Structure formats: C-alpha cells, structure tokens
Image (cartoon, rainbow, N blue to C red):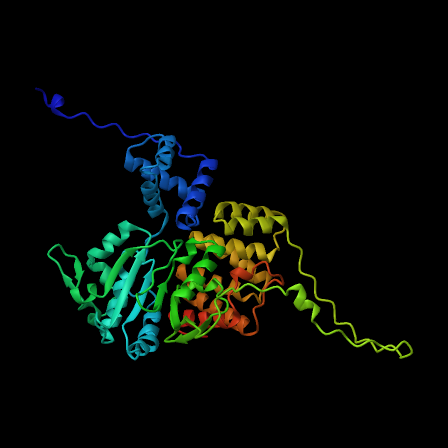
Length: 472
C-alpha cells in the first residue's frame, strides 16, 4: 500500500450558514430573558448570533434552522438553552477583586459577625468559577472563623462554572493577587496548579441558582448576614434589577450588608438601605426595621378623601382675603426627542445596538444634545468600545461641564485606557460637581442612570484612592 493510500482522508470542514435572521435572534433574546432574566451582553444580536454559531459547531450542525429546532425540542431544549446562556455570560473574575471591599468586610463587617452568638451566613451570588467565594473563605479564616461559626453559599446560573469552582483548582497565575499569608490556603499539585485547602472547602457550598428564580436561597434560620452580588446586575434590565434588589432586601438580616460592584452602584437603591463607607470602599446596609425598597404609593380611598376638613365659609359682606403671591412658574423640562425615548426603551430591553442606532441618528441632526452623548458614552463603555466612549463623554462634559455623572464615566473610561492622570482629574471633577448637587440635564429621563450625589461623591473618593490618591 502506498504512503498516499495510508493517509486517512481529511474530515471536511463544517460549513455553517450565516446564522439565524434578525427576527429569530430577537425571539432568542426574549427567550433567554424569560429563562434567565439575562440580557445578552452589550454586543446585542451580534453576540447572540456568535453564541448560536459556537453551539452549532459544538453540535455538528450546519443549518441554523436545525439548531433552532433543537431549542424547541421538548426533551433537550431547556438543557441546550442553558448551554447557550453560558456563552452569553462573561465569566470574568479574580481573587480579591476590588480588594478595598474585602478590607471593608474585614474591618467593618466581620467583627460584628463574631459577636452575633450564632452561626453567620454569607452568600456569593454569581460566583462564576469560585474565586470570590474562596476569597470570602480566606477572609473569614484570617479573621478567626471556622466552618462551625460561618458558612458561605456560592451560586451561579452556569453549572459548568460551578463544576470548576467545586474542583477548587487554579493555575498559579490566578493566585497572583494573593498575599503570602493568603497563599498559604492553597497547596501546590503535581500538575503545577494550586488547590484550596480543606479548611476553605468546608466553609463553602456550591449550588445552581438563577437570580430570576423564586424563592431566593435563605439559611435555615434567619436571613443572610452578607450578600456579595458584584458585577452581575449589568446583565439585567432596570425592572429586573429592581426586583432582584427587593428580593435580596427580603432575605437579608436587618443590619445585613449588600456588596455590589463599583459601577453597579449606578442602579438606584430606594428605601430600605443606607450607604456605609470604610476602608476606601462603600457598601449598602439593610436598615433595621426599614421599609422594603421601591414601595408603591397607596392611593387615598374616596371615603377617606371625604373626611378632609373643609375651609370655613366666608361672610358675604367680608372683604376678600389677600391672595398670596403666585409662585414662580417651574422651568419647563426640555423637549424629549422621540429618538431619545426610543433609545432608552431599547437599552432597557437589552437591544443595545438598536439603542445605539437611535442615538446616532439623533446626534446626526442635533450634535449638541448632551443627553444623547451621555447615553451613547455609557452604552459604548459597557460594550468595551472605550475609544468611542472616550470621544462621546469628552463631548458631553464640554457641553455640560457640571454634569457629575458624565465626568465619573469619563474617569472610568480613562482609567481602563491607562490614563491615570486624566482619570484622577475626571474623578475630581465628578466629586466636585456631585458636592454641588447632581448637575445634569433638567429632566427625569436619565434618573435611572444617575447615582445620588452622596453615593457619587463617595464613589469618586474610592476611585481616586485606587488611582493613587487625589494628587493635584
């Protein structure tokens, strides 16, 4: 047999079609949101199409119609949908990420847990591959806690990520953020990886949980003392975030702490929480006996309205009372272009590309519209298009020099682009504007994207400390 004949025929490359059309992608986005509450990341439909094509390659399917049929299958559809969701969630994490928050945990929170007189409970919601959960366990061990005094629940929507977390094995470069004292809790393995010691693993329980699913997990007795839910809420729309925050409030102990990511403080927290700062970081604390967030106003019933006291009747021959001066007419809100409203609606639905299109169409005709520049900058920042976001936000702060939130986002973009001096200047400008009040275009349209002035000033202080201090 010749050498040529012995060579096995090469397997032909799988030729995929272009992927689902726009209408099918929109339906898939809706189904993912219904299944997991998640919005595909800021890439929108493009990200969804890419994820579908990855699953088609893995399954050996060349036609997107066959893949969509698989999703509709009554036996395998839900399992396949879970696999698709995993490709849409960025499992980016690290040990002691945003270390200032762990310092706040150690200095402010853990001493209080030690004096509870009962077992304490912590929840790492959206734990990904486990680095956050093990960082919590290390912090607890260093504070003198053992598995009988405290427990950590680590949950995620991705079973694949949880399987990796439960193995508790990490390559050496993942341990770089740990101090020598912290590294003692990880033992080297023959294959060059490091494994968490049993003392850590005994503290942690891993479980699949979808933040859209009720009921939320809760300890056998009472509620959670600490919840870490960091860099997770960016995947949800505004209404879903409000629901999640309300449910977390309900499962927190009075006085319990909620840790969010630095940028996620932009999602407003209503009644029921107070801002606590320490160790160059801030965190939300459930007010003891406080109301639940975002409580609805109760209308007055008709029979109650009838009991309102009426003013006394005036005698006919009495002189008319002097009329009080009329208050100044409120400044009318600026007109809202329909395209701006469409962009906000699209952003809330997770249709980021659609929102971007509306904003760019508006800016083509009204290049001085500051609200459009702000929203465009925020969307570009979340998409990772930092250079474009930099341009949009620079234009915004030129048009609205007192817009604190615009300066803050500009600092975040500059920080990510490796411009520390410019970032410090932007954070200083944001802090100064926030202390003068939240100067922004005078309408309620942008309210969900704005941070309360005190929280924004605190966030700027934290970012300045991270960036090396307030050097002028």
